Length: 225
Image (cartoon, rainbow, N blue to C red; front, top):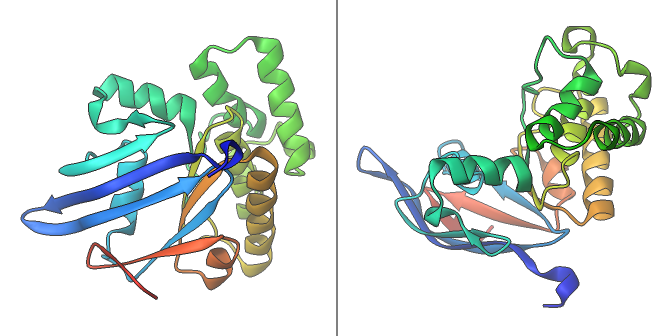
């Protein structure tokens, strides 16, 4: 694997159980820089649990997750929170924008958490507002935005701190088909441009189709399609 395609994520023999029921069972895979991977499978197959483990929100019972060489299982809760802020961007089905902040302020928020200078924050936000084509809505609050506009803000927010990995949980699940197409096109183009790895949980064939490959889960195990 060339330096340009180094592994951003390395998952090795991951296992997680709830109340004695295996939710993840021996899951192993890697994701390279700029690679898009779809996590597919029926409800209850372990997709969201795997995404939460990748994001450091849940801890696996055993196995290893390395992000840019850093073993998540070796980090404290504070260490995981710092890693999430700096190296991971997340896109949710229901947007999760802060309702009292404008579109521009929502995008800027991760940079404030990282303590970046005001001038750099302003420039990064302006560039991404332009890139996702909602600069004209910069001052609008989430309640004033359409679903498609909110998801474009969420994509910009996920990318603004230049993470190594984006985790997307059903990013088109709350959108009509036309806006879903726009959001998927943006995700494909932006991950190509930034060489950011993307792991995308989806039931949508259209969303899976923008990915380079799929990991299909059934009963917590990786299975062939």
